[in-house]
Length: 243
Image (tube, rainbow, N blue to C red; front, side, top):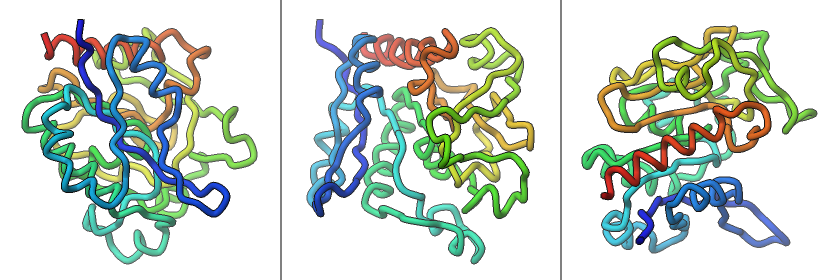
């Protein structure tokens, strides 16, 4: 059986004074485990010209972590520009074009961390340039000293997919973001909130599968069975559409 293709756009880092494009192995492992075929879209010169071919092969779209989203993408004010750190305009443009195609064709989409922020922005939502500084919250949404072990509580909205996947009223989630959703796009509904009111997850109730998660379920698989159910639901939606 031919596996449906899930596009994942790479992110960039420096190694030995060279630029390296990569996708985290946990994303790729889970896509393969649940019967799909990940295809990495590199953020390099020339990719925009190749996008028509990538779009033709896209059965699912996974948007993952990376640099800050450019403030101009979400009609930011001067404060947003002040707080934004590193950006990657080419990555923004590649993902935005893929997102618009996926939304038009009702292709399943999952956005994680930065990916969920971009999904919100493309559909008319806005962001905090820096949650801590603009929202003036006591809740830390990133902890560099305890990067992978830090957790904070979120409350789950009843009768949402997140409630179905986890079967709980509250989770303790990891948190790696300094940007965050300010206004949710009109088409989306919240699925979870932090204790400072910040939305931590959302979905499109009128789509087969369009989900945004501010946290990383793939990085806390041992915490809750629901973390795997998220990925199973995403890939099942892709396979159902491809049949």
